[in-house]
Amino acid sequence: MAHLDVDHRLPGQPLMWAFLLCVSVSHAGGVALDRIDLLSETDGSWQHDELPRAGISPRFVGVRFVEQVQPVIAFDRVQLGLSLRSQSLRWAQPLGDSTLVLNGGAQFAAGCPNGVVLGGAWRPGALRLGASLSVSSAAHWGRPVWDGWRVLPTIGIGIGRHARPRAPWM
Image (tube, rainbow, N blue to C red):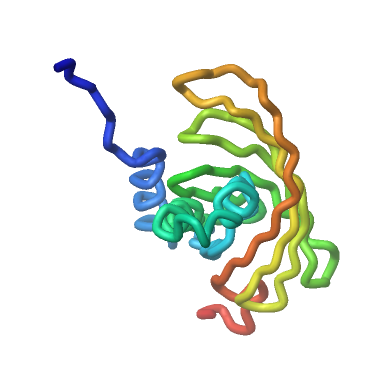
């Protein structure tokens, strides 16, 4: 019987260590854990591929849900989202004094660039509701070929610190 060499590590594991490092120094130099996206807009595959199968395979869909939850670290207007499934590096531009934000940037699979995401969000307080358009390829480090492009509309729901704190300690 042939021995199969299967890698049982989770995808994006090195990036999670990087996330933990960033959180540990989050009070230095304007770096902060901005929010946790419970429903991530980054690649949209969970919303379009996994969620419709929830009745058929709830455990699998549940595991995939956990993989797409994305902590977001903010460096002023630059936002770094790190999940087990995908990562993103975005620029967020508030629209004047309103609670609306436009954002766009690159998305990655285990650190391999595989697309872009453009969208907007409404952030009245600690809640963030977003809508984006995700354009992604099937590229990954095992197959760095940028083909098989998908364009998916996505929604996002996140919770975190208040977008405009009322006092310095909030």
